[in-house]
Length: 83
Image 1 (cartoon, rainbow, N blue to C red):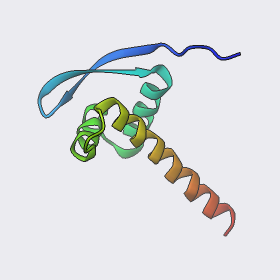
Image 2 (image 1 turned 60 degrees about the vertical axis):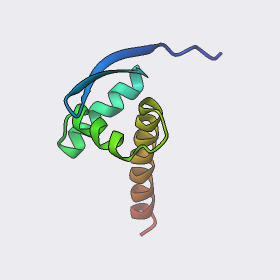
Image 3 (image 1 turned 90 degrees about the vertical axis):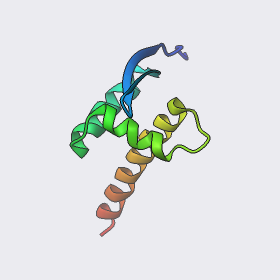
Image 4 (image 1 turned 135 degrees about the vertical axis):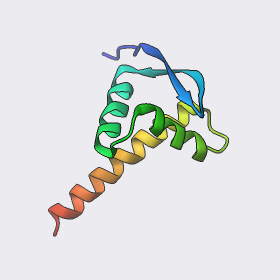
């Protein structure tokens, strides 16, 4: 059975301005984890994403950045396992 995911709105600061982002709870948790691993705040991570996002919406760009982060980790783990 597929459950609809609920979006959670939170305010983040991008270059000193406040903006609202709506993401699933698991995405917010992932952002916290990535920030802890990289030693940056969620705001700083999202600012970096904003600078690189091109034509994507900020929310879409954040989701893509989260996916890329975990894919890199999976690739590193896979490479370490086959070494």
